[in-house]
Amino acid sequence: MDFQKYEVFVQPDAEVDIDKLFDSYVTMAQDVEIANRIINDLMKMINGLEYFPHSHPKFHGVVPETRRLIYKNFIAPFRIFEDEKVVYVTRVFHARMDYMKYYY
Image (tube, helix red, strand yellow):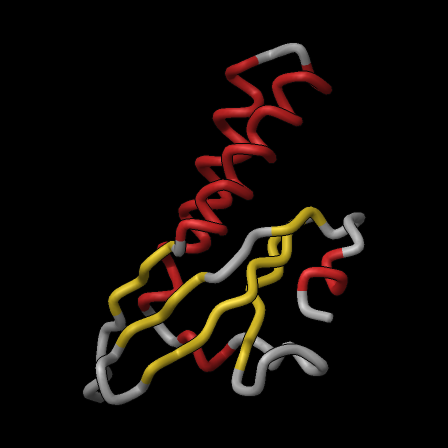
């Protein structure tokens, strides 16, 4: 079986989101190690989009052809550009956020 590996790019807005999530976890847990572990696990999942990104559900009601990675309490919308074999992670949200406000 032959499959293509995709290149994964985390867009600037998503990088800012991840930094804010890290800061939030440091504040809540009062422990940098816990925050590091949470964010590192999240980044492993994001980087894992290089394999089979189409296996993730479509993010209906958002930009057409957007899919979403769901991991624990996080939602990371992303778009796949098939011709270039590229995945762009556009944002990263905590599931409790009103993340739809960023799209409307």
